[in-house]
Length: 319
Image (cartoon, rainbow, N blue to C red):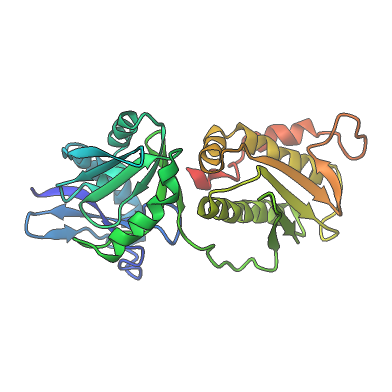
């Protein structure tokens, strides 16, 4: 074959080899690794850079070539019925699992399953399993994928389940909340209606942006695990951060950005059958979104909001 191709590996694959051309399949340390190498039939020769500059220079074109070669590989699949749910199995080719990187292929099988949102498993090399993310089977797929992963027919890849929306991976589930260094910055609670509250100890706007981002990712992982959600996420601030117009505007900005993120809302609807709604409280007082009759600290600095649009959006971990 002698073609440059992406090859999926377990999440710990050669983690200390920084100059090997590889990356996470999804931006998470629990994600499988995508390594890039030339398939020469009996063996794969993996590509490496000479230094960091060489890596940054060569990697984009190398990745583009590898993904183009992947598209040319024809992978067959079959659809079976289980408990009234269609399950798609792509197998019979050693690059069946890697087709999760082929957007056109993923959109094609989504069409076959009559769904834009898929739950996908790639437990070992040569196998890809996909279902409609809204089907009742979504509660069982993580178990099925784990069984295949624990009893692999080829090299293991991942025991996780991936959410694929419009042909692209948007989330990874089936894992405990990863440990972070931010345990002092926020804590979680869940009520009987599966609504979440996040206690934030942020002491600046920059820190708040980071804490909202990280804590929201972790709540989303919990929703994916439990497959239940009441639809409400409340961020609770305290005296560590001053209540002023800038803070209120920033909280409104977070909400506005999230609500305009169609992919995020579709993901929540798929996983939890509920749109995500957000509230920000400061010492128990609602500061965002403000009701129409509220008068305290609610004027928006239009110049700041305009500048905000030109900055990197805080939710770009989805991209």
